[in-house]
Image 1 (tube, one colour):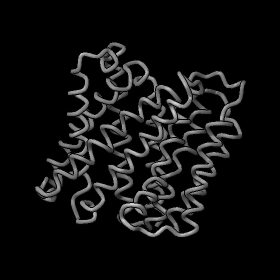
Image 2 (cartoon, helix red, strand yellow):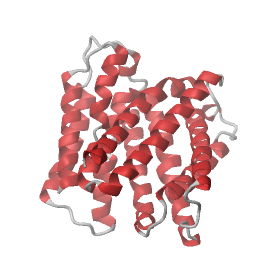
Image 3 (tube, one colour):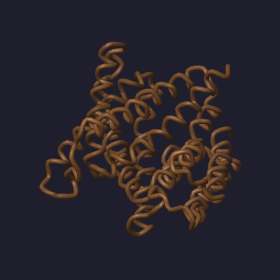
Image 4 (tube, one colour):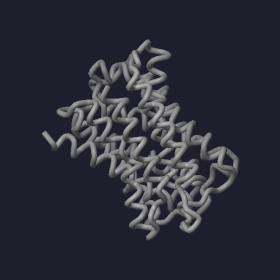
Length: 297
């Protein structure tokens, strides 16, 4: 049924939207303070949801250490690097760099879990990397002056942070995969992972360093936007993906959910009144084509 495919596409659209929503508060507060606030709010939302619905029975004691490790690497480290990238590279380049988590997961599965990679999948991985390079190198025209298209600091630092975000997400997912395959409730498992990240970020912000402190003042509008981005991205978006996987074909769902780098372009066009460059469209198209080969093979 098309409803499952629509759910996967809806999740990708929400992730694109939350990337744009997060840009202003992340720059206002700084990546660490923003991510800490977001994770605490999301952890509270998920905890309430699990307590009122499925409960914690599916989370066995043996799952706790892997889930804690997965949350620390995949969310604490991964999301922190992601929002550091966002503040440096803008939402479009960040979405492209983060899309590398899919081929990285496939490569790690091949290296560590002896999973097979077919020739089309290898071609898909190559297309995704090529698309990201194309979008970063040729994704901006000189006439595009909006601050979302500007790069702060050296480009290589932003690229390394984006790669770190994608790799951390891949490693975190790889650690959590056996637990999810054993039948653990995905929302409860996500709550543990997000809770670990929230705790780690709270401890990090207590350190006596200026770069972990809020760069700007908290206000009701700022916290409201952070809460909305967390609810849409990690609440509604995650729910849509779980629903899509419950009845849709895994390859199609994974491919549709990987369209965020393309869906963010018309949103940025509408918001900035500047048409994305041809290189940005071409790079996003290559990422989607590569994802199709990677997930459908």
